Image: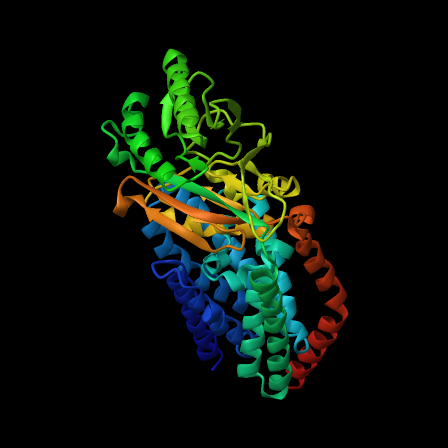
Length: 488
């Protein structure tokens, strides 16, 4: 019988792993993830009898989820093995921790499981942050704006807490008949709190106005010589896309990361040509380019008078893939085009900032921009087919966390315009749509920096303190459990 019990537990763990994989790829469905952890957590509550049981359950969950994911993402072998091993350890730690706290009194055990997940995910983001918050399993929730409004308060870790705690409460309601009502009431209150804040954020808070922006993109296959295409040839694609954006009255236009590669006299000529385009069209341009003189990755901002507004240098590079000079993390902001006010509110110019690709997988720069009250974030990016959806999903969180719009011009990926509330207003997948420009009106708010922009991952410390405070109650329950086992 003990062997059958353990096999049943591992079967439930495999079911959770399969559901987590399905939620991530190919479905990208948050509704699947909303129940994906229930089999695992229910198994830990009902069937696990030791830390070894929990460790094996975590290992099975991780392998069933991560092995096929590594295959479909087509990472280099060394990266796939290293990242897979690391993420397996993360999931084992999360599962073992959840096993210990789920044995606590209801509904405390479920909330402690959420706190364990927060602590482990914080370690995941910070210990080996290869992809930053894109490593977070809760990333797929970016598709549902009402569910992610909580991240302006507590970041993605706040969402992790809700996702895991809610499924712990649901699992408790299913397997623990004596405390079913307690689990259900706690689940209703938790979801009501999240929903109430979402209603305020989406329907009560009103913008001051809007500004029309555009993003353009293409794939390297659309260029005659791939990514090494000379700037003069790239301009043959860039100019008609810019003309289309201007016809739709865009005031800020963002083009892809390293859309141009240039040095020396060619660089001076190209930037002069782009400045002339900005002046003739009376538009602000955010131009992604690789500076071969400095060996770094930049955005050049050009104003509607053709003036140079400044340049931002990419700070976060992808390990083992990007081997050029990283930027120092200096922010660049400027006053861009004026917004169109609603009602009779006083018009003002929007504040614009810039990040590049991998930068928006991290929150250090994005939060500092939020404190500076940026309204619109220009975010050139360069992806590849297997990660394009994952990266866009993660980028959405930066908009909600700091309440600014994200204008994302992409090569080899998905260009998108994201509102400050996380709604993707428009997008273009350049693998299917070819060279395209997208245009949308993004709302502009005058609210101050969000709680998350100011305080970052404060919920990680709160989770740790909560676990410490809950320890006496958990220890009493563990002692009663050992006594019951001995009597049995």
